[in-house]
Amino acid sequence: MSGLFQSLGRKVLFSFDPEDAHGMSIKALKTGLVPGCALRDDPALQLTVAGLKFPNPLGMAAGYDKNAEVPDALLKLGFGFAEIGTLTPLAQPGNPKPRIFRLVDDNAVINRLGFNNEGHEAAFQRLSSRRQRPGIVGVNIGANKDSTDRVADYVAGIRKFHALAAYFTANISSPNTPGLRDLQARDSLKELLGKVLEARDAAAAPSGTGRPVFLKIAPDLPEASLDDIAAEIALHPLDGLIISNTTLSRTGLRSPQHTAETGGLSGAPIFNRSTIVLAKMRQRVGPALPIIGVGGIDSAKTAIAKIRAGADLVQLYTSMIYHGPGLAAEILKETSATLKREGISNISALRDRDLADWAAKDIPA
Image (cartoon, rainbow, N blue to C red; front, side):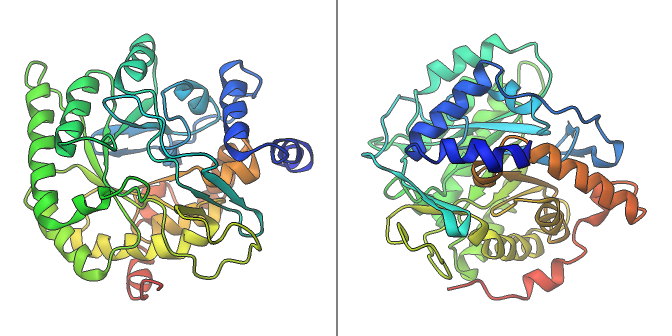
């Protein structure tokens, strides 16, 4: 699949505007034009995180399926879980176009989409229609750009989707909504976590079954901010972290075009930065708190490296733009082969093996 995509599919898709190409890929998944993954589940890749049983640790990150249009099609590609969104209470168009830029020489993308989505109700209807289907589908929630009470927007997301989400992600780390990253400051984070987790517990009370809540943070935080975040989440029953979102850094890029565009950078260049921040946060929060590692994963090697640096689960998105829809299956196949070759019975045994080495690195400028 990857070879065919590289020779034919990518050339065709890359002839279109990036956002139009994205829409075409969603339609292809909707109509079943993309074949599913034929791999059998490997017991060595199965693990339980935050009370959820994952068939494998590889997920589709938020941002691809913003409106919950194709979560089951993504799971059929081999992903162990899919995260939809970011969803805001009200539909919003996002920032002016063009707002996605390919950096082909770097296998990277810059986007300044700005939480463009159809709002809670449209996604709620779609997720309701798949209520009885298997598979782990998380809901990534955010705040409207013009909201007067952003914390209330996150609370609204918890209340709306509690019966439908396998887990939640509170996304406070997008660089494309002005002021959103301010929620990472300790006083703001205290209010956010308090109210979001209170809403989760209230929604869970009738059934006694609560949904895990993850917090997604940026890769551009200084170490003092990592200290503050770790200290604050220690005071709340948060279920996990997602590290990280896109970066504002442009260090080391090779592409001749678009590097000066504003927005968040994702893809291969963010791997080192995001993995260093992941390891530093793992040291700060300790071994018990689940962490999902995101940023620059494009192979079994990089997926395993994230886990060895402290991640329980991993997610990708940008690399599928460059390698095609067969990437998940390829990563899983090679990961299984690596575990068998090294005599490792379960992938969870790899976690933290390189933690100290990664955490000792400086966060890039």
